[in-house]
Image 1 (cartoon, rainbow, N blue to C red):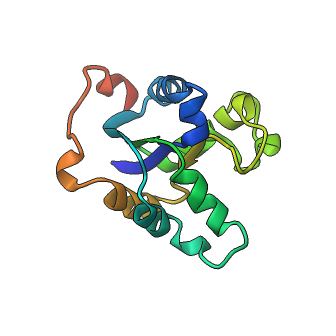
Image 2 (cartoon, one colour):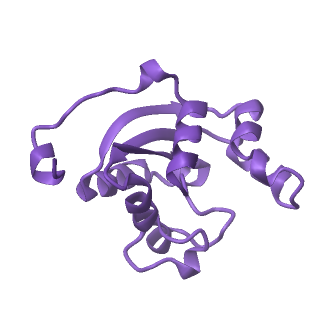
Length: 150
């Protein structure tokens, strides 16, 4: 089963959109396997955004993600990464499809509410960075047989 990291970033938390994000992923049929509400350390932020180090927006990105709490979650399901990216919408909110989280609630790239892993291998790396193995709950819902093909 594929997994993806999802972060409701500081602007999403401050605007009260955690529940909205969770509801959309649940309605999509994805399964929540871990969640925690945390203040992000500078070290974790730098590890998470390591590929952006040296870019002009890097320092602002680190300052932003560490400025207020985030809701960190792990979601799983078949093709979870693609499904979540479709639900979240384009990084640029003005390019996001109607009905996506970013289209419906965001206006700027720098305040686009939510992070989602962009590839399955990125999801694996990010989940391992943000969560310990014992924090991931292996469980099944009664409706899984109606959502997932075997």
